[in-house]
Length: 103
Image 1: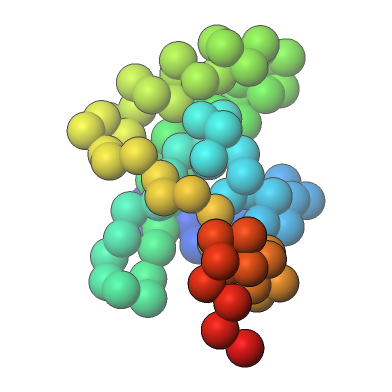
Image 2: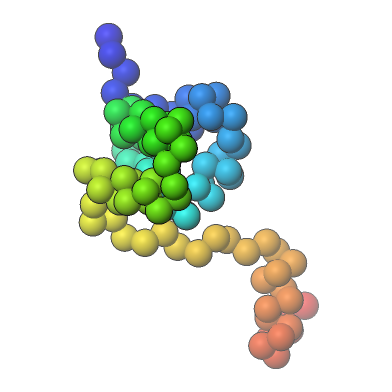
């Protein structure tokens, strides 16, 4: 049976990236975003990931890879990613800067 979808573990094993590293690549448009199968299940199309791996292997430029990723069928019409979550200390610092110090 052929695997059509990949898990985050599959990707981290194949790339050597951590999950955070892969999400950074996604945020920068250099790796396809996952399909959400349920609130707790994300998967990537194997053939799309293979296309990106091939572009990396061929030393394509970041702009060429961004173009490739944006044109993948699963990526068309996706909303933009939200900004990264702030760490607790950064959130507290921002509250203090805004005059909302609620400790």
